[in-house]
Image (tube, rainbow, N blue to C red):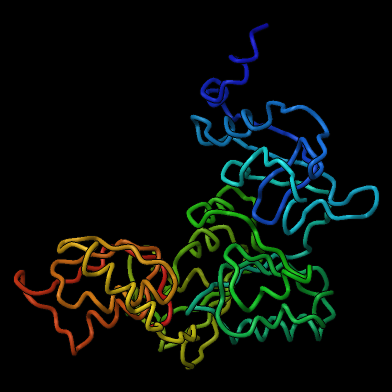
Length: 362
C-alpha cells in the first residue's frame, strides 16, 4: 500500500500500459465537461481521484490509454444527464481535453454514414441518402460529419425517426437540430477527430465523398476537404464517390485510387459555398492594425474562420515572403495569389502554401 499522493500522481498513472480509467459522473455538458461531485451548488461527494486517473489514461506513455466516463442517460426523474450546460454552480471535475469516451445506456445506431464536409459536401449523395431513407422506411441511421455546406436534409424534423446527425464540428445547417435534441454535437478538438476512426470509436458502414475525376493512373483527389476524411475512408465498409470535374485536384493525403470506390456517381455541378458577408468597417480596421503592426515579412500565418482573418489577409499585399500553415484557408488567401496580384521575387511578395486541410469559400 502506498500514500495517495503517489498512487494518484498523473506521471505515475500514465506509465501503466493500456491504462483504462473508468469513472462515473453526475452530469456531462455538450462541450464534454464532466461534473462528478456536486449537483449545482449542492455537494454530493468528495473530490476523488477521477481527474488524476482520467488524465493519466489520456496521457499514457504508449498512446493506448482509455479515459472513460460512464453514466445513465437520464436521472430517476427522467431528466437528461447530458445537458447543454451544467447546472448553475456545478463544479467541473474533468475537462473535455482528457475524456475520450462517454458511455451511456443509449442504443447504438443500426447504420453509420460518414459524409465529407465543407466545400466538398456531396449534396447529390446526401439528397439520395435522405430519399432512400424515407422511401424504404429506414430507422436509426447515424450521419456523422464535420461542418457541411448546403441543406442537411437528414436533419429535417420530419426525418428525426430515420436519421440522427452527429457533428464533430457543428455548422449552421445542423444547429437547430442539435438545439432541439434531434442531433448531437461531439465535444472534440479538431486534431483528435481522425482518432475517432483509427481507435474504432466511430466505424462507418458507408462513406459518402466528393472527388475529382481520376487522372491517367486512376487516382482521384479529395479536393477541397481532406481533414478527417482519409481516416474515415480507411475504416468504412462501403465507399460511395460523387465524381465532379469541378472539384479541383489537391495533393498530399488527398489522393485516393478509384479502385477503392464501391460505387461511383458522375455529376457536374458547382461546389457548395459558404456565403460570406464581407468585413465591416470595424473588422477592416482591426485587420489593418494586425497586418501593419503584428505581421512581419517572412511570417508563417494561420487564419481561423471569420471576417477579421480575411481582413488581415486583404491588408498584406505589400508584405514579403509570407507562408501559410493552417487547417483551412478562405478567400483572403486566394486574393493574395490572384492574377491581379502576381507573385514577385525576393524583393517583392512570395506566398508559399505550406500546408492546409480544407478550403472554405473560394
